[in-house]
Length: 243
Image 1 (cartoon, rainbow, N blue to C red):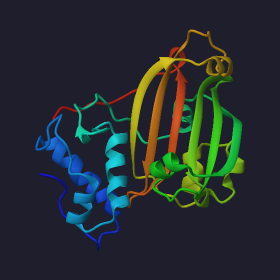
Image 2 (image 1 turned 180 degrees about the horizontal axis):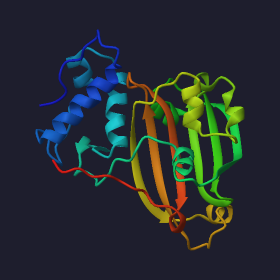
Image 3 (image 1 turned 60 degrees about the horizontal axis):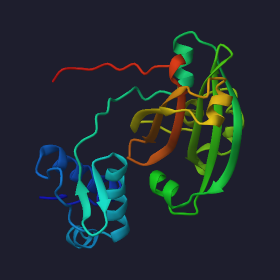
Image 4 (image 1 turned 90 degrees about the vertical axis):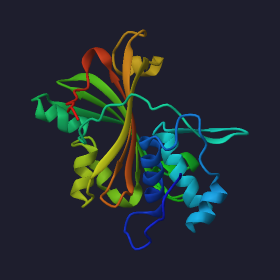
């Protein structure tokens, strides 16, 4: 059992449909850990789509931690990671909501061409203009997080000049971008020397990490971020519901 047929009349991108279909197959147990997906060529021929479309769909599953590519074996389903959903809000929003005074220092901001990795994450062709931004976010004057984000340049149209005054999501919404859903992974590691210096923390400090890709209602990525939060100053709050 593998991906079902695609709906070409739908506004949802074909790669997203294929990825969601494969994801449902894996989550249902029809494809168990250790089993292989159809190879890209077979899947593309069966569904009547291009091989790059299939590759993009599978790459999304790789990013979600549901499959891995193994030389000589193809794409293999792996045991699910333990992940918890968080609210689709920016750190700026969170700080304001808790009456903490957010402030931002833009460490770097430049328009560049998307390499293959960023292009895959944002579902754009390699070479597409993207805005790369690194910021240091503080609360009540105390450094809290280092955030690196990539956004298709066409979505901000010069609004990035306001990144020191407000949050990225607020700027995107002001440009008419709808934030509908996101995929993210939270982890922890030792801070790098640079991170410890910027966060005014001990070299042995721990940072919580979060990588997130946000999507619009059509399933098109609008932003990808990689953030590091000083663990002693920040924690993620989650609401869990029983099923």
